[in-house]
Length: 195
Image 1 (cartoon, rainbow, N blue to C red):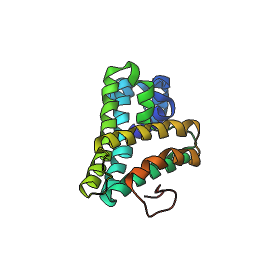
Image 2 (cartoon, rainbow, N blue to C red):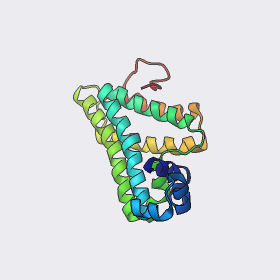
Image 3 (cartoon, rainbow, N blue to C red):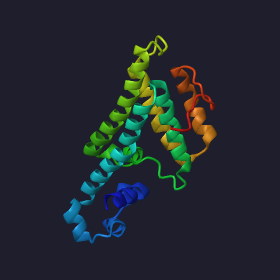
Image 4 (cartoon, one colour):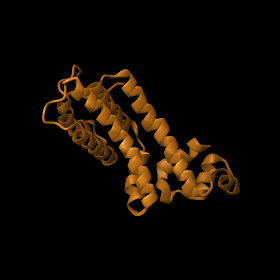
């Protein structure tokens, strides 16, 4: 049921999703929906957490576990571009969508989204600090600043992919940033398209 709610919010956003939409998507009557999840806002918060756990956290854990630091960042972005281009409905990322739709005028949601973005930044920072500790990060580059740069790039890619889902555009946005990680042994200008 929660996955159905995630899909509903992901397609329409918080404001445009009605309780009736959620009831139809989950198969629960409106009173049952309220009994199970509380109000629409509580259901949205639980849906957002479910999305973060299954999409963001699971992907980061898998990538960190199976790839060296520079490759982890390359694979992360390669996966992001592949997913964005395969998203024919142009739903984008529920976290980024919420940052744009709700967070500007909702302090509690702004804190929630800020925490999710901090988790992604943390992944970049861990990878970059490992690179630095291995002596593979070019001198003069601050790992924290680069982590924030990659976070900004992720946000930009997600927004651009909804309006112009073109591989050349997205890879062109990404390629200069990946050069900061040093040479890669794969094709595509250092963009790893497969994880």
